[in-house]
Length: 131
Image: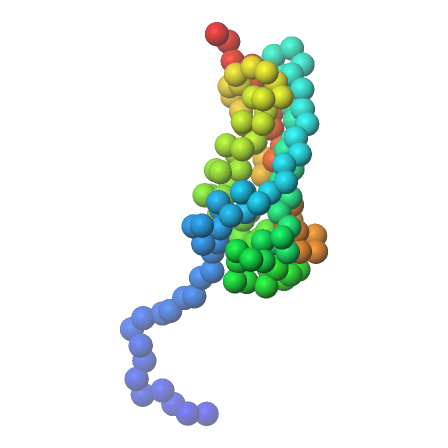
């Protein structure tokens, strides 16, 4: 084994995260399905965003396959920009379904891959806002 005579003062780290434009691309290409209801003052519902990477192949340079979908789902869950954008979509859908302004909104964001698709589940709990 060779002995190191010189060492670097710097430790290098390579990181991968979703590109800034990815958030817009993913949400813009998503099929949206929402359900929920206002029961008295409490709203409960969910929104599912389904992104088929194969349908985006003309706009992305990454292969639209299972591996890319898994990577996107993993990185999406850890990216606060993505989670914040998803929360805004979920709250907008919740307001639309409730037919009222909502306050004290809690949104749980889950992401997973199924084949070349990324599935984002946005579960919403909220209270109707008093006027």
